[in-house]
Image (cartoon, rainbow, N blue to C red; front, side, top):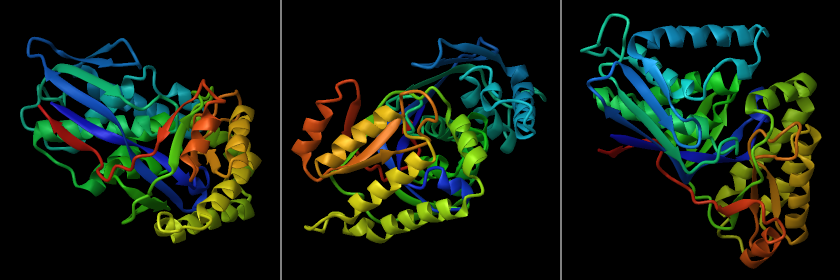
Length: 354
C-alpha cells in the first residue's frame, strides 16, 4: 500500500503570510512516497525513511503516549520554554505522530487495545524526490502521504478540507508557528492563493520558463528562521504591506505569463520580492550572487521558502528566465547547485496502489 504527495514552490508571500498577507504557491511534480507493510507477528511500527533515518521501533501501546508527549512539548515551545528543534526527538516522530493523530480522529474498529489506536503493526516506509530543508515542502508532503495512506487502509477517507487542517496541525511540530502554504499545496495540488489560513485554488497553469534551484540545506530550520524574522520585523506593517502588493501583482498577471510576447511583468515583481527578502535578512550571500547572475542575463530569481538567517546555504531559489540557453549558461557557473524546470502538478496527495 502506497500513497504519494507533491512538493511545492512558493512564488510569493513566504514570511509575509504569517502576518496576514497573501501568498501564492504551486504544487510540483516531485513527490514523497509513503508505504505500509503489515507485519502480524510484530507489536510495533517499524519506520524506515530513506535519507532521513535508519529506522525506529514504535510499540503500538506507546503511540498515544508519544502523541501526548509531543503535544506537551509544542505547548512548551509556545511558552518559550523549548526551541522548535526540541519538540521532536527523532525525525521519524513526525509521520508516526501524523498516523496516530489520524487514528485519534477516526472511529477505528478493531483497535488492538484501549490504549492503541492502530489496528495492525507493520513497517512504515518513505522515500522522496524532495531534498530536505530545501523549502519544497518535504515535511507537509510526507505528512499528507501518510494520512492518505492510512485513510485508505482504514477505509475512512477525510474530505480535502479535513486533510488540509490535519496536515497543518501535524506540521506545527516541525515548523512551530508556520503558515498554511505547504499544507494547502500538498492537499489541493495546482496553484493556490493562501491568506489568513484560507485557501483558494487558481485555475491557471504557471507556464514555462520557471526553474527551481537548490542551493543547499540551510543551517537553520524553517521554524528558527520564522522566529528570527518575527523578532525583528513583526510590527513593520509597511513591510508586510509591500510584500502583499507584490503577491497581488502575481495573482493579477499569472494568466498573462504565457501569452505575453513583450516584457513579462513577473520579472519586475520577482526582483522587487527579492529585495524585500534581502531586507529581512533571509537571503545568504551565495544566493544573492546567483540571483545577481540571473538578473544580469535578463531573468529574475528569489528565495522560495524560509531562506536562512545565517550560514551560506539558502535552500530553494526559484527563477524566471525566458531564455532557456541563458539559464543553462548561468547555472554552468554554479556547478554545486542542482536545478530543473518547475513542472506544475495539478493533483494533491493521493493513493497510488498496492
